[in-house]
Length: 342
Image 1 (cartoon, rainbow, N blue to C red):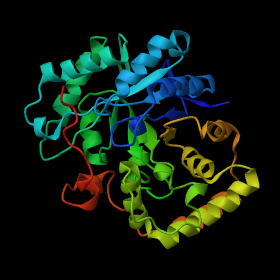
Image 2 (image 1 turned 180 degrees about the horizontal axis):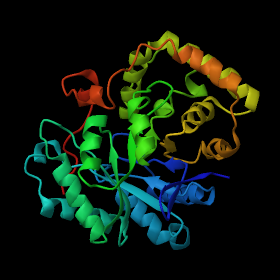
Image 3 (image 1 turned 60 degrees about the horizontal axis):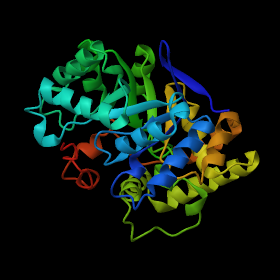
Image 4 (image 1 turned 120 degrees about the horizontal axis):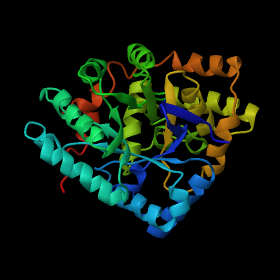
């Protein structure tokens, strides 16, 4: 059984969320018919929550097709999308444009109300994040949005939005054994205010898996996801320390009859501030492993062994998404900032 988590009164999600970024452009070709069948298989397995975004090219439309082709399964699904205004629109985006983008998501997804809209703001130097978040709150009161979440905010600017009167129920962040930036003050604030963390990158784009155990450091990555998480491995401490972590995860996995990715994900799910983990699945190849997560119980010995390696980390340090906000740095240079063109 896949466990569930309650983000708000009357609104529950599966604690394993099917991610949509890997179905967007830049991750290889997608067989649309197979992708729809795969979505059905995830729902039938109990993974009923899907994550997508207005800037994930073609993914909202794909989920809308799924809803049309599998209407009975679609009734069980919660769809989390995002509102991500383009970087060059931050200073001028207004209520009409915000509503037009929300209406476009409604049309693409073929729904009358968006279950959860997660708001991202590229540049704090354009201090309009509260103003625009309040536009989403007005659209929520108008019935177009069910719940409001944030994604990749630091603590200061998350506070601005909450204290500005926006009822935030979730915060989507990168959180894994390699990247613990959301821990500490961010996790404490979210726990205290009832904001559930929805965590992506829990297996670092597939690096935290059996496939990379004992392999040399790659030199020819072309997949955007792998490039992104290879940078995180360097921040963590480099390839040798990463291999030590995989070796420990493998020993723990063998104790429980599971794989490395399942142990890495379970470690994140076991943190009390975490509501769910997002798995970036392009197909059902790992669905049997995902289904074991509900019953996987790690011991204190397991956690001790894993944390002993993680204690040797160098980073990444600082606020959530701070490295990625540096557009001149290696993390920021791989981002695409203008994907929300209508």
